[in-house]
Image (tube, rainbow, N blue to C red):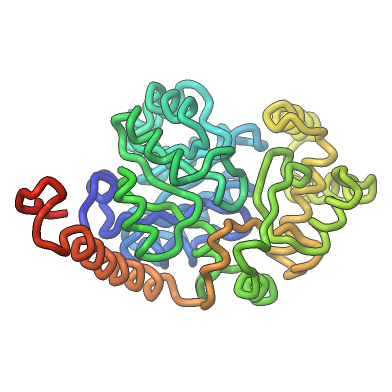
Amino acid sequence: MKTKLTELLGITYPIVQAGMGYVSYPELVAAVSNAGGLGILTAAMMDADQLRTAINKTRELCDKPFGVNLVQFLPKFEELVEVVIEEKVPVASFGLGPPPGLMKRLKSHGIINMPTVGSLKQAIRMEQEGADAVVVTGEAGGGHVSRVATIVLVPVVVDKVKIPVVAGGGFCDGRGLVAALALGAEGIYMGTRFVTTQESPVPLSVKQRYLEATENDTVISDYISGRRARYLRNKLIERIERRGSGATLKEKIAGSWKMRKLYKGIPLWELLTSGLKLREAYERPLGELLAGFAKGELSYVKGDADEGSITAGQVVGLITDLPTCAELIQRIVREAEAVSASVKEKVFAQGTSMDGSPPSPL
């Protein structure tokens, strides 16, 4: 299966795994890349040494291309960038967008830039700043979401940029891959589907909650991360909705303590500086952001599916099993081939095109 994305990234199939906090670690990333897709490590919540270790571990597990997701404003961001450059990571992706000039700097070291956006304006700006491809995530996705439906946003961006577009938000199978290609995208970007695989480090109790959920069991809230994000409905979300506000004082203190513990080697003034930048970027009180940070660990590390925050796209309603990444990707490819043949048969059922001329191949 060849598209502009597979040629750009040097991968076999146009399937990209999202860089997700608490989830995208070497075992999952390597499994996706070994299966022919592109796995992406998350650098969030890592220092430079931890990121370097994660990169080396990924290389021990696979010899295929992979990426690292970087989130600006986090402590020691520049040191993380240096590690990506020194380790010659093939692909860099970005949360919140990269700082001005960073993509051109990375490109000078042979690194492919693939930022994630949620609007046409952002996509155009990323192309102008040097992006080699752009991930476009629509409102159906998990985590931070656009205000525009995927089926509309993807072709809107495709029509206005020259670089390859990767479609995110609502994809988990071969039908979705064919649909994305029909919309003009060069591949798909999946988070929720890769969370629910054997290699995902997410506790089984939380994976089971994904399997039990329907397409109606997600909700968009800005109280946890500071920006509109889609989560599985649980006791935490229901309580936040009832009170109509963000974190309690106790939750803010717990989040602050967790952040301080995670970045224990970093001076307090530097943590505060990063925090103020995050507050400005997310337009949300710092205490609430820190509380949300702790809620993610509660679910994805400790396995509390009731009180932890669980990001999930509406596509969760289509997910019913926990395959290995290799099984999943091969299934998607087989389904895509079957769906393509089925569509061709439907469109050209009479052996002619709509104007009466012989049909052209899909």
